[in-house]
Image (cartoon, rainbow, N blue to C red):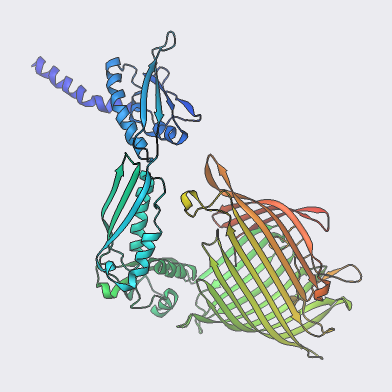
Length: 621
């Protein structure tokens, strides 16, 4: 009985030995910082100490993943067991190095004499990676309807051409895995959401150091959108959701379109959350689109506190009623107070029609510091607007009444005007709100007449543009955020066309200067200089800016911070010939914050010979 009990106890101890060994393993990877680096042991007396001599990329990989390093904590590791582990480690190291595209490396383990009195054995691993494996050929084959469907020819071409691995590039396991995943994503993002990888093969020839890659994709059936299956509606009707989503029945499945529709629903303000998915279990020719919604509260009150170098501390109170009784429109009323501007206003917006146009009416009372004057103004607006993913349009009638000052009369006067206006914005950025490339252009064109005892016609135009141009491309020509950075260009121009002597509301004229125009000068400090030295708004505006933006790299990784150097120039005048540019130069940084780009700039105003700090958050165009 005692012998049986002892045998059982021994068996339990042997079964628990592997778990005990795992419990003694170190929990963190050893730091590696030099071309010839020691991998420091975790305990005070380790079984061995390993030095890896290899190129940085390989040394870092082995220092993190070499199985041998798991056994450093075993202080009772025998010489014979260490010899066995070294034989296994050589094969493990070859497999790891092969993932980087080196299939014929030279590996050598050496055991050196330990220091006097130390039981820690000293090991050295030398790695000569040899010639890297280069991609010689990439073949992508298609199965299923995509292989014969003429409508999918462009999609097939994009999958074949836009792969992450192309002939001439170095082969690595990580890139091969990423290339397969990208091919599958490109297949399932349009028309074929149930597509899959049916076969993949990386044929490596160690003698020629070349790789021939084969990917076979099975598309499955092409899917077309059916009707919306909506859940979560209580207060709003199905028509509102349909017009906001803008997913046409019978359209081919496009993941980007579903994501955009989901974003439109979330951004509309009517819903706290929106989730859109495709029911692939349904008929592929009319697949149900599942729309899950959670409605927002009918009314919302938002208190806001902020600050900027343009306006100083800012307080805002905003009330939203999503469905005003009687008319069903949304009403947004807002009160804003800061150092430069005090305003109160309300805007009523109708639900979108079938073409996504909305009726909009707004009223605002405002007191703001423009140039050297405090200007009180009132405005009424009524018209229609259409907002899209890339294009915004609006046309409206507007009444303006405001204090004004001109070079003919330094004492502020009151002027009123009625105008008809058309505005549009075109965006072609690669991503928002953190674009790396692309451009945007917007313009406002209007015409009207002054009101009062003398009625004079006038025209007004304002245009603006912004562009981003990357200065390089990523490793192996993959598009990434590059250390070379990008150029950011910004331009703005405006003109009021009218005969001399007419008095217009200041809100219809131009001023510049501040965080988003000419840095190095105060907010709206650049305008027309009157005979007594005061500044007022003018009829012509010209602003330009050039920035060099570069990502900040830390530990070989691109961070969310960027550095920038810039030059701004701008001018305002009552005649084109009188435009005289004021220049600002400086340096700054950008941070990709959760609420949008944070801009921190230190600018020097050349004309005023003074430095000025500028802070701004957000991207809008």
